[in-house]
Image (tube, rainbow, N blue to C red):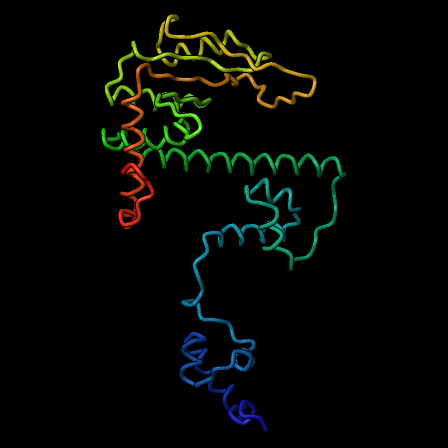
Length: 294
């Protein structure tokens, strides 16, 4: 007889105790500790058929939906119709009602497909509402930034998207290129914060030649508030027979390059500030500086 077998020789007596403790409302862990049962297989057999007490069950936000889905299924509704009614996914509905009898088909395949499409539309609408709510809550949490917050954000944006001096191409000048109007607006706000005047800014539109070039030029002019003299010649990307352009929607406006004249000093401030951000993110970095000029 093995050690495990001998330890649980009086299985029925042990099960009687386990069941009694379970009905008193004890959890599996409490029963295990009380009876000194350290074998999960034995514990499972001791508690077989005994439901867990309510207090040990995790609350589930979808319990109400699940109950309603089961009710509708018992009324003979298909997954598609339940999806239309409740706005939840068919995969969830399947898990909730798969033990219930399948209703008889009363519609043609075309009718069922139409219901399915409506159900999917409901799901998409729900997801879009959730997406918008999440974005709105996140935007509200940001609020108005302080000058310091805007400064650090601008440095990070530039170091991610702006031109940088390279060992093989040393040039200290500030040029920022992006297609996102929001990025351009934040960068222009940052330039105003650090004291760059409008007369030192130059703009260039970069866009596919098959796009609406005039509309794009007007869009960027209105966004920046700059006059025609601040804009250089638009750069057009030529097309070949192999060109497979995907950014062809009406909202495509190309990219805008923002260049700051006489900006070597500003570039050095940006590079130094970025170094400070890296060091500030983990003070331990100061003992192992990777910046030879620091």
